[in-house]
Length: 243
Image (cartoon, rainbow, N blue to C red; front, top):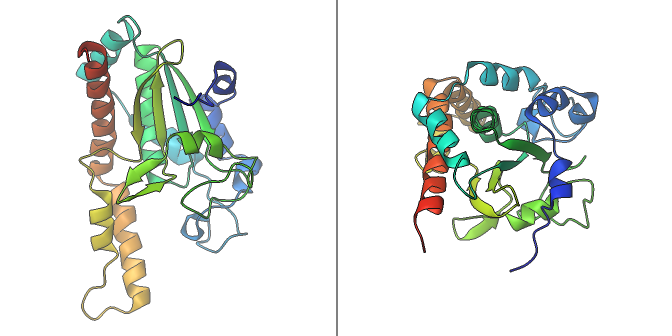
């Protein structure tokens, strides 16, 4: 097995959740590229990136683990070689990251786990499916390459990447992009498909409105909770089923 690029020293360079929220609103982050629709004015590359710090802060403030989730992570963390560290690769323009990262912060707090967050990209956004660390050394593409998302017959540099480790950095579980019950590609495909009588522009605008409305609905909180359940269940299997 190839040696992981995630060493204790590399992990320690990541941001805490509080640091990440502050970074999201910093001039350094707002100067970075993002997808066009995620810029403050909806413009193209080069215009002002949205400040998502308030969104992250608000979602964290109202996110609460259930009693069962909190008890489960405490139980898991107390086991021999139980979870102790959570690595997250995130981009704040990603709705999946805005949904899951605050919940992961709550999970880490409840279990006494150390959480560290890394950007995926540097100043330039990744424009290909497979990142090239040599082409963009200011990003964390080497970490991404280790945890590519295999789906739909290909590999994708999806975010968030969530990797759970023991205290000595033995990997226990990885969770990528969204929970299994959130059929995002299917839902987004329907939202983005043309309705009778719509122009191309109308389809795009309506699809975006529906996506934004969905993010503000109870279902985004439901899927955030489902992601935590999925991680906890996988960790239970890893620690209790002997292979």
